[in-house]
Length: 291
Image (tube, rainbow, N blue to C red):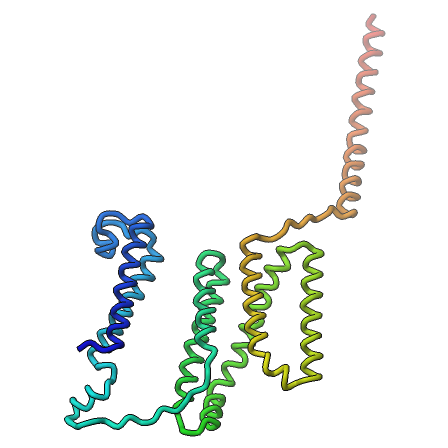
């Protein structure tokens, strides 16, 4: 009997391997290249085909592991241990997590970076790596003890010295990169207006935080995610459009230097012109004497 986990991952394997084959033929593959993983013929676009094939392989390995261990099914374990039933410990409720949403954000950023810019691709990879570490630690901390407060203290003791500087550097990098793309794309007046609006928003939020701190704390995660989303979208659109043209006027010192060089050159050629005139006059005098 196939377990639920095996069915899910094996179906995922079938979908991914089919997608890899279709993508291989539609992106330039020939003969049986996509079917034979490039053994007989081309596979088309190597990057897309390789990613789909790797995901399909991972799904197949997970499905085989799940069918081998029977999804940790209680009935299978009871049969293996020759007992009637295995008691299942009660599951404690865990806190809601933002990491699935952030992981989708990181994966989307990585895919967009493959097309647009290497910096955006690296940013997406950094986000995905951050999600893997943070989500793993949250899952461990939710079950380490029976006390929720003790779990949170243990997690913060391990992760706070790491995540505070990393998150700070990542946030600064996102803001600087995206904001620089936006400000270099819009006009000079538009850049001034954009920075003025951002300053007004920050000042307004600070005023609300001082007046109603409890109300402001409730909206910090939502506002932070919204700000990151707006900055990312704006930075991507600005990178697609490209920087505006910058016109550098000539400085007065350059024009003065050019005029000085021109005057010096004319003065240098004057003696030569005088010699030429004297030579012509000497030739004329000689001609008159001979005549």
